[in-house]
Length: 400
Ligand code: C5P
Image (tube, rainbow, N blue to C red; front, side, top):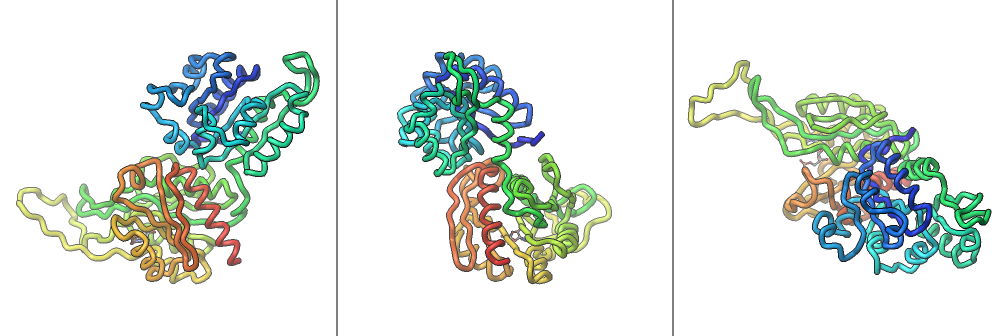
């Protein structure tokens, strides 16, 4: 069973008799570890009560664009950005047409337009409606836009007809939705990722460190695993669960991280440095706890090794990607680091903003390499990681 842990999924429910099966879909997505929010169209409310979906998902259900209470909790644009997947099940013929035409006169339509998440629809309608060229054309158009079409199933319908148009079974919908998170763009490639902060001891109880939740590195590790890579995650101390299926190395200091990186980079194809490495370490670590009785404490620091540039220099054919967290002149500083550290690409983010970066679940970055610069607008770190891994795979595969 494919895990959906850390995946954020909006289940969109539209007005068809199959809406009662959406409750089961929500439950099963949660069983696989997904964080689920439900959006219902007014038509869906005729078939199933929002309260049922609220009780199952554990969160308020979003029903209308002008719902002040829901907008105050998580506004529709925020919700669109939050999601990694928008799964519309059941999707009526009418709602599919709404998507094709880009209508935003209802909440779900607006979210579809605003989101950069993956989108899947599970059509559900009468067999005659499904067979109509208008419906088939509409589904084809969505497919061409990258929307995944799940089903429909064929058989006896609620109206008594027999034929194609029944919503696919919840299990099949969930399996196909899970598959959307996997691509084969890094199949068999070895990827090493550094993540989190490093800690530099001053004495047995004290250390200096950097702010870093590790979320970006862990999300990239998951996205690389989903893309088929063998991943080694070298992590400083963080409070996150270790992505399943990766080889995990826990380190504390920059020196530990350097040694592990050099060791594993030798056999790797791609090295991604997201770690917030402490720039300096104490020249000597006090053997006993430093007494706190003097007003001023002087500690001599020396520069830590630059892990990513040491790794890049030692492994000429390795594809190396760094990160640049800057508060001013973001692109210029990033371009400088691209060169001085000998990187193939650098991903720059602006840490002066509190809504992205560091401890936030969202990020907005620029990808910079020697011949291109691409802006990745604000989105969840999970979603962004998938997009960045796709970009890394694209560039890596171009050069090999
Ligand atoms: O801290 P700085 O802005 O120089 O970080 C840029 C990139 O270099 C990041 O990818 C970071 O992980 C890496 N780095 C490193 N070793 C250091 C400092 C930074 O690998 N000592």
